[in-house]
Length: 266
Image (cartoon, rainbow, N blue to C red; front, side):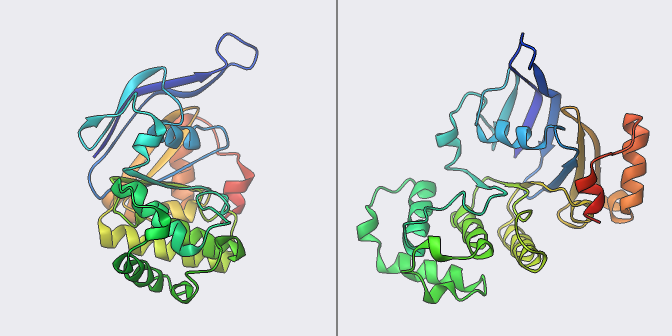
C-alpha cells in the first residue's frame, strides 16, 4: 500500500540552520497495517508524515501509494486519498460552518464531487447522521450547529470522522490526542481503533506515549535522527514492555531515550 524508498530531506541546506530531518529512510506498509511511531523531539516523526502527505518534496528517494508514484504529486491531490489528523483540534475543520457542512466538504473532496454546500442531498444528510451516531457524542442531533461551538474532543472526533467518511488509502495521525484531557483522549483513541479496524484502513500514527505505541495497531516504529531504528511486530511486539522498548532503543542506537515528555507519559 505505502512504499517509502530511501527518502532524505535537509532543511536550510548550506546555512548555519541546516538540519537533516530524514536520512535515507525506507518504510513499507501493507494494506491494513497500523503502525505507531515514537521518538524524541526532532527525530523526524512529523516530518515523515509531512513527506508522505506531500507538504514538501523530498530531496531524494520515492513515495508510492497504492501502486502510484506520488513523489511529486502536490499535497492537495494527495489529500483526496490520504486522511489526516493533527495535534491541534482546531485544525481540520471550518469553525464557522456547521457540522453538516464540514462533513459535506470532506465528502465532496474525497469523492471528487462538485455539488455546492447549499444542495446537500437528503441521503447525504442521513449518511452523516448515521456516522455521527457512531461517535456516541450526540452530534447527530446538532448537525446545524457551527463546529466552533464544539469542545476539543468533539472536534477531534468529528475530524476523524471527516478523514474517514470516504475510506482513504492511508490515514495519518500526528499526535491527534495529545492536546486532549485523558478521558477524552481515551475516547478518541477507542474511536480511532474501531474506525481503522472496521474499514481496514492503512494507518501511520505518531505518538509520544510508549504504552499506546505498543498497544495500538500492529507495528511499533522508533525513530532517531531521521531514521527508523526499530521496527517490531507480531509475537515480538506482543510480549514487549515499555522497559523492553527502551532497552532495544539503547541497544540499537547506543544511547538512552532522553525525552521527558515520552518518559513521563508512562
